Length: 373
Image (tube, rainbow, N blue to C red):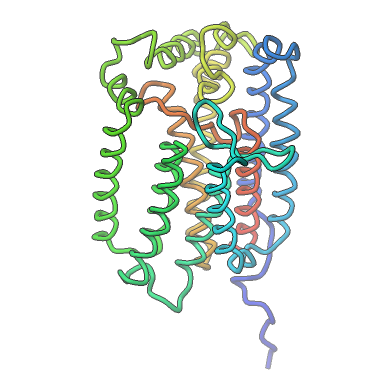
């Protein structure tokens, strides 16, 4: 008679998914290299230091992200279930604090929180903690939260609505859309009936429409998108300059570091418009390479979600994969004129220490989950 193993096959730790690890590594290196190029002229003009922005990204984004990566990569992802609700409450607290004297008003938005010498964007942290909370909450088998209205749909709507309201007030409309759509995908994958999903979508469309109509600058963006030939020096100026940069790149690009628009005509070349700089310098080939990287990353995360037998791990992979895919699409599509212009960083590429650190930490969690797939 053989003795049963002490650890089930489903939960035994193995090797991480090396293909997924390679995608993350290539995406990170490519992003840092392109940021170094996109920011060099701007850093020289503003701070007389061509390396100003890339050094800040390495110190406040990459270094912090690596610390987060090492922690979550070493700790079994199941342990985060116990802390998911607390982490969500902390993130909600940070979202409230941006409206206090601790918050910092930048470009007429309350998105930054300053704690002593440190500053960060709580909305970026919420992308991690909201998905983690939903995955832990929906994976609890004691309650039928995916299918029940009172213990499932209603709490989901209240929590998501509260987060959405705080982000709308900053304002951070695109972040609301990315976060809540990702949450809805996680809710659907957990087993929620279609009538709940369509009901939420219907209510969301009405609420978003009301917010757009009630806010002149949001309405102006929609009108500018629908009438691209008008107002070329105003609302449509950034997209027009981005399209010129993208078209200038041709098939092979003008060469690394040789962009003619990044320091003169193109607004926000290191964050919202960095994809246009990539397309100009690296051409259609370089831009397509980046799109393929994001597609491979998304499909790999979804494939791993199908392989793992644990609901918590499955929902985390689906949620993080959706956040990354949606944010990459919104950034690249908006600066290319495919959808209305909105400001979200390109994951692993755009300047922004908080965003980079959070996405690297997400990578660590997904690789930890892959060890149990």
